[in-house]
Picture 1 (cartoon, rainbow, N blue to C red):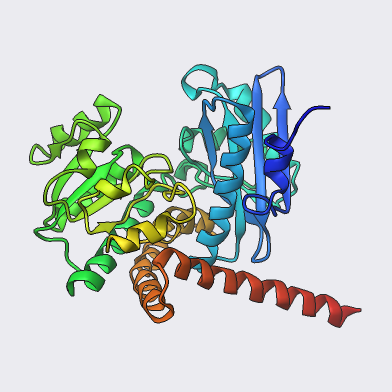
Picture 2 (tube, rainbow, N blue to C red; picture 1 turned 30 degrees about the horizontal axis):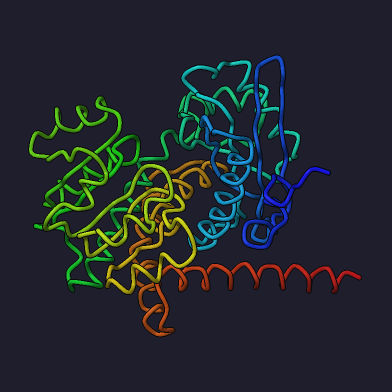
Length: 369
């Protein structure tokens, strides 16, 4: 008998990663599509979350990532005040090698088969042009181009929201919401990191960057020669005098190896699932490093794509994303009151909103009987 204790089914159903409402495995042999769609919760409304296109080493790794990301979207959408639950999709493979129009159309059909329970958008490895293709088969697609009725690049407001989270962190820690004179290290200057650097420089911050892609670094330094470059993330987090560290690439940036050597007093970045495992938030607190929960500060993008479903208005979305400043401050206040790390405080607030929605739904069903 095959031992599945560490396999896909165990991952789906175990308590720390499981508990999702629905997980769909999608395959289209003709196009080469292999995808996982995870719906964590629809308590607040249809699940909303992006599509990640990534060359996972194993199918099990892809499933685990989809589950973690979907759960994070439930919390993110709840904290952003959206009437959406959490979902996420991952397409397995190198987008530079296998992404084709046929594959994206096949993926669109998979999403459409869920009948609106899951609304998709862009994520790592997918772009506005890809969502335009997916939308040809699926009406529940956001992050499309303005020419196709969409909001365009959601990384614009994602970066703006992270910037607001940094301002709130500065207000909480130093008593002033400006980053002027502060040294900020940004790891990953692709879609979101690029715009974030612009906000930081405009606010008077000193910026240090790193990225595994030389072209992404050159794009920044060509436009802003004053920006310093670290050799890699390990060098960046050890930078002397660093005030804020902004992880803006893939998850797991805060772990047993990185937290002990961080020189920054604040961590506030755009990457999802920055805490590599439970307990890292306490390690940060023990080192007196202020952590702005990732799913709170990076919610600008999901605010933008959610608005697309109702007729996109950029100014309205920017105003909503600006409220990330107040939400982050409220989390820090709750953390202090409850004597817990900010990540735990954010979880409590999000879980309370979802629980209230489930209770309201149950009472409505009971009343109809």
